[in-house]
Amino acid sequence: MKSVLAWVLATGGLLVAIHFLPQGLIAVLGSDTPAAVVISRSMWPVLNRGDVVFIKGTTREEVRAGTILVFKHQNGIAIHRVVRVVGETIVTKGDANPKEDDP
Image 1 (cartoon, rainbow, N blue to C red):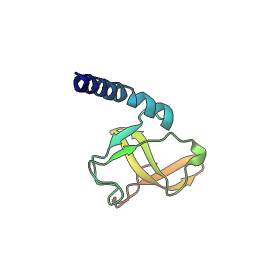
Image 2: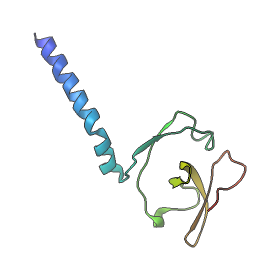
Image 3: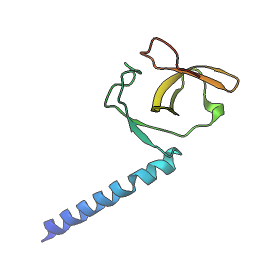
């Protein structure tokens, strides 16, 4: 009987943790989308297909050359490295890509 009760409590605790994990990550990381799965090879060898990345919110002032950004574009989202910042323009490029992204 004790082992059944322990199993029920452990399972219930796990389910509660899974339920609240996304909200906890949103609060801790300051990002509406706190995690993503890499689906391309554009950032190889740093990021590979299937890698899970946690996404921390940032401010414009924190963005510098070398920073890896997650950003929305017309086809979805991208995870690329900042090549340079010129005024308000941020230029990115996937580490494995031959050319820069459109700013």
